[in-house]
Image (cartoon, rainbow, N blue to C red; front, side, top):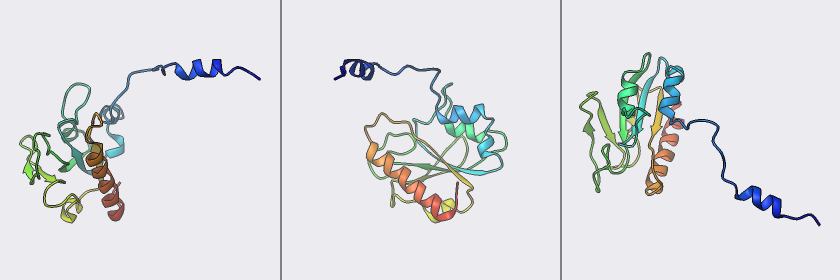
Length: 151
């Protein structure tokens, strides 16, 4: 019978990286935002949404050529992740856009907030401490997008 020792040693080795890890907004920027070109975009994000240079994803998309950032959505704890209770809609001062709360009166997307959108982008980076709420928000986003034919 062959020894299992080589397989155990191979399984114990850590994976190696072949290049830098990029977050989605950096990948989109490297693609010159081609997947979002000409689209009205809704962004689901919070304070964790930023690129490799430290810019908010909100600001990157708001200035992306050929992309119209049309709506903002925030999950539990709000856009600045500093509220530990239900959060109402607010306004992002940099863009002037309404930040639709997905943890206020309802955790679902208000129908009117999706009416003029062609695509939803989800950008929440998390260490896994609130996985149940952010994962649920992602699930609700996928359901809402599918029901309305939004990419």
